[in-house]
Length: 359
Image (cartoon, rainbow, N blue to C red; front, side, top):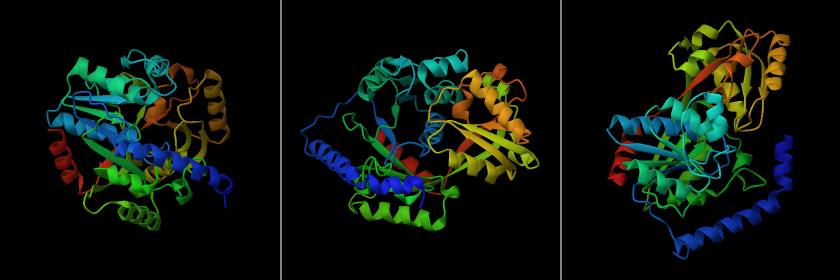
């Protein structure tokens, strides 16, 4: 048993109290005692049951691009966690990526950078952000990142991501696990996405799928979609910042020795995916807390650690790349992993149901 699992058992009584509080709040919404606000445009919530690291951002990018290709005007709203704009409403603008990420947050800037032309708004209050975005942009649909628990905001379609690679103890209530709501909350979902399906043990994938299905009311059956997360290409950090498509296929890194750098919710998923996709030797991985902002001292220490480990390349995530300055790297320019969400055969039905809900 790991230290995290041992602590999970210790905090189990507190988890029960947390779950009771969540249940009472949901009952107040279910019975109409707490009011829901409509901002005037259809809202699609992209959320989860467990805290952090389920892959919402790449899925949001996939969905936004799909809707744009169908001619829909899309706006994305996000909290902008740990940014200077977190406590006010702001539209993401990009000059230098590292400066923009400090102002608006790493995930919103990553989305605005990846989805040029799709407005991204940030702010702590989901309703206020959504309503201002609707007023300014008049979108066909608002994609609300991490909004499943924000029930005060009226939505037309609820997508819930379950990370199929998560250990089972994560599916205990906070603080004994990482669960914000129990599986029974999936009764509110219109679609359930099993993310990182390619990184999951088949037994664990079946267990999570069965737990989700058993919690659902058969009279309101959501669509299930399995999504694989793939890194087929890498791009030098300088090219990433300038949006020059200088792609390096993953297979070309097979003979390299890679040192990984990340500040994400579940760094082990990044580690496993890079190893799986490249076949390269991972000689080290320096992981910081989610949304961490790197300093020049950090970069110097990382380069030294990579050199001591015999690394030939440093690899970072897209989310972290927007916070990094190319000139801070004195020894070797990092490669940015290009993460893609690849849905299964149910994607067409998912999209059809979504379009039907927002029309």
